[in-house]
Length: 227
Image 1 (cartoon, rainbow, N blue to C red):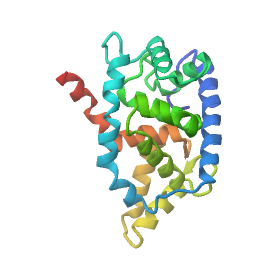
Image 2: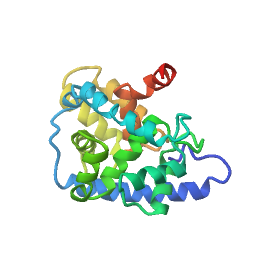
Image 3: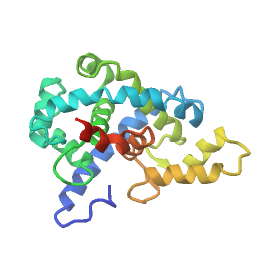
Image 4: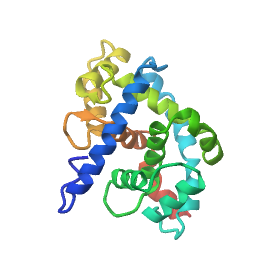
């Protein structure tokens, strides 16, 4: 995301992220043609506890592939992870995903970044081809990933693969019609998603915000300290 990529030597990374973003946008546009089962933003919020519980099941998988137990997965470990889970991404595609999800550019994927990365894999691969693999490596997560995709489609009113500020306000207003606070709620949620402050939100930005909404990001350090 543009706001994060400001260091020297980041031009190549920006190109990689843009390339991956184009794939995300196209995949989301295709999914939008199928519609969404989400009816309101409140219906999404009610699913937060169940989604949180489901995503935390990734912790065991994450720890398995964090081979040196340092709390992050590096590029080599991610390649091992994809190979074992039979996720058929090329070496370049895997590296692109790593670069896109390593938000603090420390050459390691932490737990919430890993969740975002795996969800992007789910989006970018044909569900029919990926279904069996996900059931093997990530039991019960397919429904959660579908919920996340459906949520983004619900927010993306014009189906262009991005969520705008106007679309976020519209989505919140559909739930809280007549409440004077609805505009402030919508703007707060949008600002939490729009990390690069360019006025539009990609699926990746949405996912990072979502992990915080359900509480994964804020509890991550506590979980690590307990282990």
